[in-house]
Image (cartoon, rainbow, N blue to C red; front, top):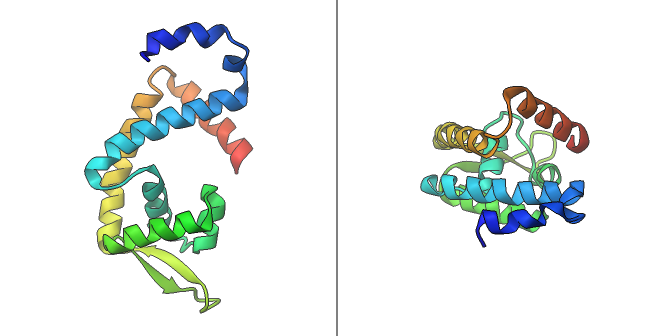
Amino acid sequence: MAKSDVARFGASELAHETEFLLARARAAGTGHANSRLLALGLKARSYAVLSLAASGLEPTQRELAEFLSLDASQIVALVDQLEKAQLVERHPAPTDRRTNVIVATAEGVQMYARARDVAQETEAESLAALSADEREDLRRLLSKITL
């Protein structure tokens, strides 16, 4: 269905429900990001894991699952994929050797820098209908309800 074909649903009650609008915006943004990140061998979820691994915060897999709102098994699969591509490594946590932290390799840090540029371009395209102030308001409001 073309975008113009669904415009008629804009008058529906559903189209004015915040949770629906958030879900629809997320689906559109994730789809767009996935198509753009594919050239780097990444998707939105693997980019998110790589971003946190390259952040210097040394997240555990459990922390990744919690922060990204993903199941632990999904995180394991994403880390396995990134590890196979030699973009991240698992290291024993300094405070608990039974727990692994996820750290970007040198190659992973370089890949993250390229992927971050793509992600920023994609975000600008996805939010092109908003002014710079509206984008900042959106970011601030979403942070307020999610962090």
